[in-house]
Image (cartoon, rainbow, N blue to C red; front, side, top):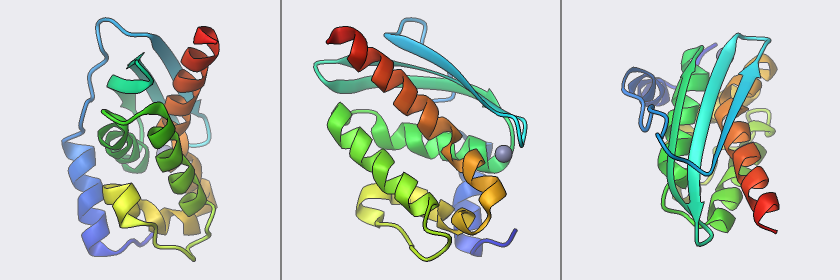
Length: 147
Ligand code: ZN
């Protein structure tokens, strides 16, 4: 798999120095997601209060794409309202479904545009989406409980 070298650097930085890679001691919801095709595993927990992602922590093992993507996601959603965070997730999901035809909106996705090239490799898309899907699951479970 070849990615633009600058983008590769962003991914490796997040892989080597992941952001928020520590589960929170107290949380509203915790989930465990796996990507069996690659062996990636993510535990993620978060605190949602007043419609906002107040904090989020995660831990995991797996390939650099899965770990870097989760790190980037955590940095993007913390502090956002649930609605904003879900729009960011939607934008990233679209990028991953673009088969390499889209570059991604840097204003919304920031470092996550570095993963745009992954969309050309169907086998790796699940790696890139793992943390994001774990986040979505935790948010949906929290939102459903409060309704
Ligand atoms: Zn993977």
